[in-house]
Figure 1 (cartoon, helix red, strand yellow):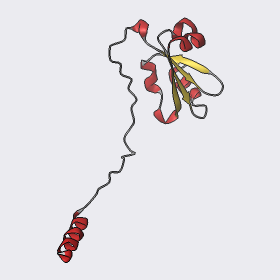
Figure 2: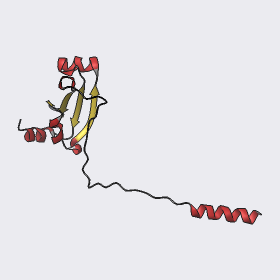
Figure 3: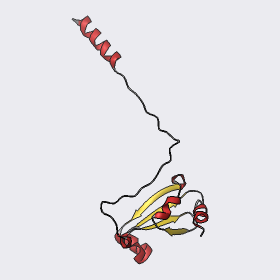
Figure 4: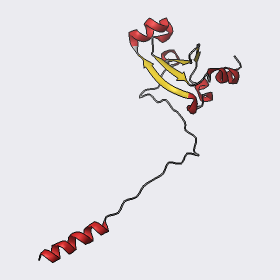
Length: 113
C-alpha cells in the first residue's frame, strides 16, 4: 500500500505542468481615459504637461501626440486641491502628466507652440 501511494504521488507530480507568456514589446501602447458618464466639454478636467522647467495645458485630443514612453508619472488633483493650484480652470479636476528628460520641447514642436 505504501508503494502504491508513493507511485500515485510520483505520477501526480509528473503530470503537473505550467506555462508562461511573454509580453510583445513591439505593440504600441495606447492610453485611453474613460468615464462612467460622458463629460460635457465644460466638465472636462484640465490636462497639464510638465517637466522640470515649465508646464503647458492641453486638450484631451492633443494628448494623443504624447508618446507613452515619455511619461514619468501621472498625478490627479481633485476638488479644492485642483482649484487652489489652478483656479477656476481646475474646478473639474486636474490631470498632471510629468514627462521625462525635457520631452516637453518635443511636444511643443509637434503642437507648433
